[in-house]
Amino acid sequence: MEKEIIEERQGEIIVQESSAKNMKKLFLESYGCQMNFSDSEIVASILNNEGYNTTTQLEEADLILLNTCSIREKAEQTIRRRLSQFNTIKKRKPNLTIGVLGCMAERLKTKFLEEEHLVDLVVGPDAYRDLPHLLKDTEDGRNAINVILSKEETYADISPIRLGGNGVTAFVSITRGCDNMCTFCVVPFTRGRERSRDPHSILKECRELVQNEYKEITLLGQNVDSYLWYGGGAKKDFDKATDLQKATAVNFAQLLDLVATAYPNTRIRFSTSNPQDMHEEVLHVMAKHENICKYIHLPVQSGSTAVLQRMNRQHTREEYIELLDKIKRIVPDCAVSHDIISGFCGETEEEHEDTLSLMKYARYDFGYMFAYSERPGTPAHKKMKDDVPVEVKKRRLTEIIDLQQKLSLEKMQSYTKKVHEVLIEGTSKKKEDQWYGRISQNAVVVFPKTGNTSTGDFVKVLVTDCTSATLIGEIV
Image 1 (cartoon, helix red, strand yellow):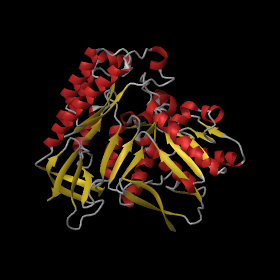
Image 2 (cartoon, helix red, strand yellow; image 1 turned 135 degrees about the horizontal axis):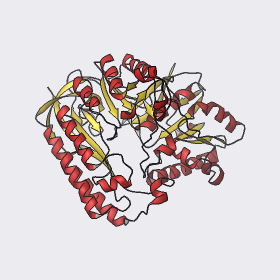
Image 3 (tube, rainbow, N blue to C red; image 1 turned 30 degrees about the vertical axis):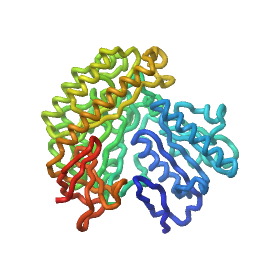
Image 4 (cartoon, rainbow, N blue to C red; image 1 turned 90 degrees about the vertical axis):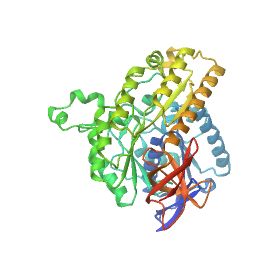
């Protein structure tokens, strides 16, 4: 076996054992959500079996794949600029193959191939198993495309190659797709309907990670709380299941309990939750297990029920607040983060104020905040007018960000003068003599390297100071 650098992340060079017989080079770049990065690990595993080792050097690549995101217009613009750079390289290397994967591939399909001539290969999120056949087509001089969406979990039996991670934390995909049909979102169209993965295959992948000394596992999906395994098929077809299938079905709370029980010395996280689908049972499982991190990412999008209705979110402001209250009651030390969109279609100043007031009630630890941008093909794009002026969107977004920074600082200050268990994930990006890691509530902490500590260790850290984004402490 030979060592090969596959990615540089957070200032750390990660190496992977790779087969010396693999002579072709794959440059794989990912954008967007955690699911895309998880999918890239599956792609690397599939292509490793086809003779490809991964490289970080563009100039030596035989194959360049870009795993793309369509959630916002800015993301698509970034990807188009990147493809233009790749095509400059292709002028010097005519045999270079360039491909687009993921959500943007699914959304634009043949446009990349037939109109813009930017790529040779277009592959949607459910078609990565077909990559070897599609690459053969490109070798024969034909453009190749497969964007067919599946009704089943597609990759349950594939052991992903862990690309560029820190060797400490890893993602395990448990669901794919989304049935929620929010009017602003392209995900149901690019990733298809919800379907869940066999819990036995999930436990098997977790076991392999634990055996390889990973210390933290994140159960991943567009909507993890919709997880429902009854023997295969989409969640929407559960009503057609047999009585036996229904009696033996596994929901997300049960899966979370299974994983936490099986691996009590491993930290367990999950993402992302949807307010309409998060049940109290999940909170009780979190409270039951010390190794389940006390953190929930709970997108709200708006604090106004009227806006939520226009977004086709299946919860109201009042129901969301009721869920927050349950979290605080059942898991009192739980951190909560959010997604919020400013300036959605028809948003009034009063509705914007509703969002700010909800943020103050929730006291969020942190969040992801964006101004609304139309996504072609979505119901909002087809049926609603994007009528909030850009300058108003920006001003409202600034107010949301400013408030969140204040709230984040308050929450970070609440963690000071306390001892927390921290999983060391690597060396601080700013100081070589400091570690960085995260507490259960997902807050990042930096602290001096002392004693015989190393990456992957759990240590007790006294937090002495903070910024709005980072805790500062020392090992005790």
